[in-house]
Amino acid sequence: MRSEPTFVVNPDGDISYVNKAALSLFGASPDRSIVGTSILEYISSSYHAPLIDQFKRIDSGDASAMGLTLKSSLESDDSREFIALSTPVEWDGSEQIQLLLFETDEQLPSGLSARTMDASPIGITIDDATLNDEQVVYVNDGFCELTGYEREEILGRNCRVLQGDETDEGIIADIRRAIDAEEPITTEIRNYRKDGSMFWNRLTITPIEDETGTVTHFLGFQEDVSERKLYEREKTLFEMQADASEQSVFITDAAGTIEYVNSAFERTTGYSAHEAIGQNPRLLKSRHQDEEFYRELWETITAGEVWEAELTNRRKSGELYQTTQKIIPVTAPDGAITNFIAIEEDITDAQFIEQVLHVMDRVMRHNVRNSVTAISGYADLLEDKLDEEEHKAAIQTIRDHAEKLGKLSEETRAIRELFQRRHAEHSLSVDTIEGFVAKRQEMHPDAVLDLSIDVEDGTVIQNGSLLQLAIDEALENAIVHNDRDDPRVEIQVTQTTDGTELSVEIADNGPGMPDDQWDVIMAGEETPLSHTTGIGLWLIYWTLTALGGTMDCAENEPRGTILTFRVPLAVGGRIEDWNSDT
Image 1 (cartoon, rainbow, N blue to C red):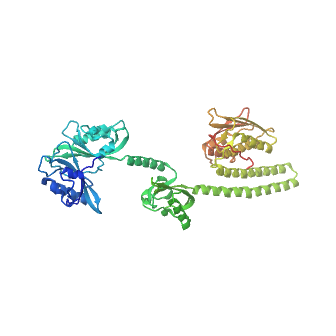
Image 2: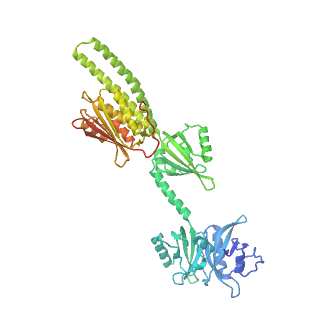
Image 3: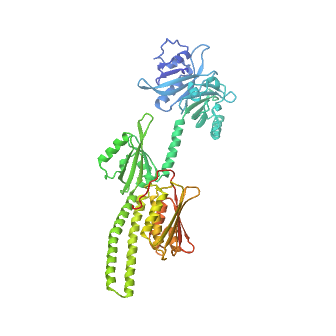
């Protein structure tokens, strides 16, 4: 690849560096040193003022790149015109100006006024506005490297050769309007290299005028911004996903300064994005963790390892909240850490619920159990001393209510188990159902439990330990609340035709479920006038909901109730037997 003629000059035009191509352009001998002389010595005097003005504007920071049509001062037929592009450059520890010179095969007009070029000079083209279809008369090496085309493949053609199937017609129309109006334009467009690969091109087109103000050429800059566009797209997708997440997400730089927070972070902490960005995550610090905790955190993540823990943070309001936090280091291709992504989940409510359930379980199982034992004992004493039937009937009523209270205590224990098991992901073989149905049969020998299982061998239920809670409760209700001397329950276990769900049908010959009881469950709430007589039906419903399943209720013929559970089956996985005694 050839090098473009290049000078490095100070703002006054004194030359600090010149390459061989520039020497050749001005007809100077390669052995001749022109460093230290002024660039103005080689430029026609009519261009001195605009060129120095351009240098001053570049040096002051008014422009990042500027173009000018120049003419050499050679008094021969070899005198030629060219376009000069000036950009800032650091040279030998000082801020100077790099001057790139671009020759064309056509004579360019003189008198081109200086213009700001807000573009990177990676690929450069010059189109002749006086020729049909604005034919390209110059391309630089950068353009050839970017597009894969050789010069002879582009010269004399139009740059629409870079367009393809996915090029936006609207952007093409915008470019056409700017050219027709002889106005500058900067846009980003999908273009295609010679080999068919797509790249995002940040295209800047600037009209070049002669001394009469007539546009004679268009100067084009092409910059590959594909990586940035990909980053912006991925960043947009990430932010959309993060904002849709219920978990708090924030991103810091390598030093720990917050650069991004999602909507859940704002809701959880009370800090807006404006308040949080630019701050350190210590604004959430609650002092419930000591300095050693945070020192270990920082040492872990700066070593490139993921850190995860439960901690107590403080909201903007001063309120404390419990959270699980995971911090993930983000590294560059060279392994250097560039950012940290923190994901938090507020577990305050979960811990509160667990605490309530624990206390309720202890109170119900210990205090209520002791009370039930005392009531039953005193009922026995009264029964020994009372002979009248009405007194014995009253004592039996006391026993019945004590038994119901004891049953309620056991159901609260099952509710706590439901919360503990719901995320356990404990797979269960369908064959195991036979075991805990048999256990219910042992507990109620007068009842008849008829079980049939028609599923493929090795079928596994997702988190099947929860299903045991639902089946146990349904069988217990079907037997205990049965008004027949011969309680009978039929359990049919089958697969759905598509093999994705398990169906468990439990049919009894009892008095049937009152409609108002089932209506309460379907409504999802209880009121003083509309409620269930206990929590057993709720327990079944909650369990199946936690399993991702459903429950239906229908009348049995000639009498009784049919409950049908449908729960998802596991896809693959290892079969683990659940111990029904637990």
